Image (cartoon, rainbow, N blue to C red; front, top):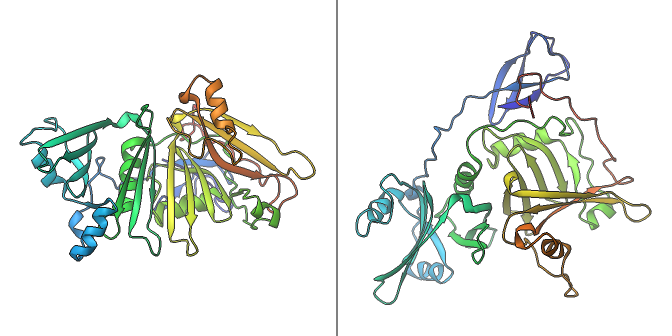
Length: 382
């Protein structure tokens, strides 16, 4: 379900064309709504409801034994057939539950990273013979945030990183071999698994900045890496299509851009897109579900040289996404606030979101917030 604005040339009871998600469709405007109102539009799902892992054999490429050895040294995993591995894990020994299904799987040497319907399973054979095997299970509810990073121009691997709320196992990392793993399919898998397939209500007070033209950043804003607000509807359309980061049931409500990087506030999560390298081919997509956010703070801009505002978010993730100390060795605000809040459960996630204050290019405010969806729409009762 999406919340879309009624265009200015559409009368109550008329029809207009709009693009929602990846689909373009004709929408009927209700009689009690008119131009400028937002109405709820439901798009038929193209997802069958359960994730179907891509055929691992489609991503296979021939490689020499030397290349295979180098990838093994780099712990770069290859995507493997989930059905075949499921059969092995249900035989001798029977590791999986009777109703458990392997949905995606990766192999590096003798080790396996298994993504099943019930859990994340790490299979670690040990010793020369491999008869001693460690099976580490992490329940899906313990994985609180995730990130995928595409390979750059000269990289041989992409990367998967998971954050948990488990003390002693804060981060799970896995390198994925370039050309033999579909990293965007991995991103979609974790989105469906952790965020769910159902639609979330639109936030009535969200300022989507519809129609706002991006004038770029001023020199001072660029040097300070300050983000500016951009049209959320354009970001929504882009990241439903190329690359398809957002779910079909997900709506981008607010979007911000700083230099080349973006931060999206969607109905389900915060997405931080970090463009890296000279060519920009290497990108990381960090997803933080709203359910992990326990507190937030905003700091307004000051005067004279202080022209940017700041936003801070605290989560229940057992890890500070960034160095715990500054360049002088002093604890960062995140670590200090974590201690005051009663341990690592209150640690702060620095969202790296500096909103342009007054005087910078792009203006202070932008257009007024759009009205909430009509009664019975996606935002009703929010």
